[in-house]
Structure formats: structure tokens, C-alpha cells
Length: 426
Image 1 (spheres, one colour):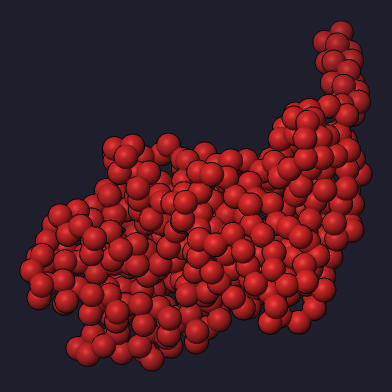
Image 2 (cartoon, helix red, strand yellow; image 1 turned 180 degrees about the vertical axis):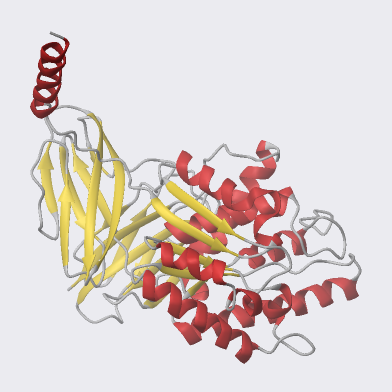
């Protein structure tokens, strides 16, 4: 009797499971991120703060950190634990932090060619097990010893060396680096009373410096501003928001300086709407194919997509871009209120911008919200190369450019918010 009851219950359970409709989620897939570093990385739980910021901003992160104190590439490239992490596979982002002496890179510290040789061993192994991983270096900030003119000059000299080392590593390997040190330099040079390290003469960041570093990594990895997050990690709201703005401005204003976007393909799109009609514009470059996922619609593979929804609301739009054997996925929320024509991106993530005329013969106009006071306009060709840049001007002259399709990036320097769009030159 008991067997008969259990058999019927199991049959009913299987029938119920089989009859369930599949649930398709448009939530952003978790991005697996690995940090390899030392105490400069792990102080004040910096990677975990980065993860918390990303999760709050809707960019889910699965984080692992390996950071024994006092180590650098000279230790990591012969450490089996590092290679075991690489061998785990599935990493989408790998952050490699050189040691402090390796970062300086001039006598009497370790010479740059030796650091590069050790870095190549790490990169080759990481690529072997994770061929689609995006790898970037961590540009650390040098400590300060005082606020005299001599101390300021010494600090900036060391920061010049550190930046040169990271540029050398990035250019030699085709990778990018997260400019944490540049944000420290910006803040401290403007107000030397703001200590971003544990103490004078200490290279380890305090909770302020580590927080700003976490914002830099969010902007560098996700190419979006950290501004608007409320993960303050012990900072006052005013301080945290200031560090967010600094990180976003330095990372997103001149990504070419940090070699960001120069060798890594990403899924990108912008959109415009007219009431409930949505027009999606692909901005991905170098892709083999695309796949769009919209609620209530079959996947679409065209370059641009038009879709009309039946009611107002907030919808998750997913774009998957295929680059050879690798893919990149972008999920973005779109809010449609059913009225008017405009660009309806989330205010915390993107600017509301209109470009006209488009197509353009000579000069196009930029219409921005009145709240935007400091901004830059960048013009790039189809391969992503920066052609022109102008600041705080609503008129942009394309008279020197050949006919064709160009990409526009506008950055609000105070909030870090961005707009990306296309302009057709006749």
C-alpha cells in the first residue's frame, strides 16, 4: 500500500514538473571575476566592495580573490595556487596586480622587462584556460610621506613611474589597466589633507582609498559610472559620492589612456523611443553576429531592432554579441511611459541626449539636460579610434571627416554618466 502511494505521488510530481512552462530570465548573468594581488588588493575588502557595488547596480558578480601579502608577479608566476585558479576556468575578468616595487619599475626596484616576462607567463596560462577572459592590470597608488613641495614632487615622480609601468605592460600585451593610482593622484594633489592611505609613508590604502579603487574597477570593467550606488563602506555619503565622481570621470572620460576598449570587444546598444515603440541601435563593434532578447518576442538577429510594446512599463532588454568563439552580454532596463518622443535611458546610468541633424553634412547639435554643466563630446570611427574631442560645446564640426558612419560618446564630467550614439556623415 505504501509503495502504491509513493508511486502515485512521484508520478504526480513528475507530471507537475513536466507541465511547468519554462521560465526565461532577462537578469544579467553573473560575471566571474578573479583578483590576483596582495595586501594592496585585499585591504578594506576592496574586491568585495566592488562586487557589492556591481550587484546593486544590476551587474551581478561572482568574485574570487587570491592575494597573499607581500607578493607580486615574481611570486605569482611560480605559485601553483595561482595556476589552479586559472585552471578552474570560466573567468570573464581577471585582474592582475603587480607588486609595489614591480609597479615602480625603475632602479633599484625590479626592471620592467623582467616584470613583463613574468606577466606573460601568467597571461598565457590565464588565456589557455580562459580564452575569452578580459585581463587587466591594477595600477596601484604610491604612498605619500608628507605635504611639503618636495614630498609632492617625490610622490608625483613615483606615480609617473607607476603609470609608465602599467602603460608598458598594457601596450606589450594588448591589455588594459584600471587607473586606480590616477584617481589617488587627482584627489591628493587637489587636497593633500585628504589621506587615502593607512598613514604617511604607507602604500596600503585606507577605507577611503579602497572605496575609490572599488569604484574605479566597476567603471573599468563594466564601462558604466559607479555614481548612484549607496554602498559607502564606512565613508560619509558626501565623500563616497565625490570618490564615485572622480573614479567615473577619470576612467570614462579618456578610456584610451588606460587602453580600455582598445583590444576587447563588448556588446553595446543605445535606444530611442516614441511612446511605446522602441528602436534599439547596436553599438557593438567587431562582432560576427548578434542576438536580441525582448520580453514577449522571439529572439532577433538583425543589427538594429524595432519593437512596439502593448503597455507602459520597465522592460529588460538583452543583447548577446558573438566574437568568434567568445560572447559578451549586455542587459539594460528600458522604461517606457507611453508618451512623447525621446531617449529614455535610466537617469543614473545614461544621459538624455538628442543629436540633430542626423544625417549631417557639416555641423551637428548636441542637446543636453540643463543640469549638465561640464561635458566632453568624442567622435570615433567604425574601428573605435578617437578622431575628435571637444569640451562644453553644443556644436560639433564634422566638416573634415569623410562620408560614413561615426560613433558619438558624450560624458557628463560631474556624474560620469554617458551617452553613446551614431551619426551618419553625408
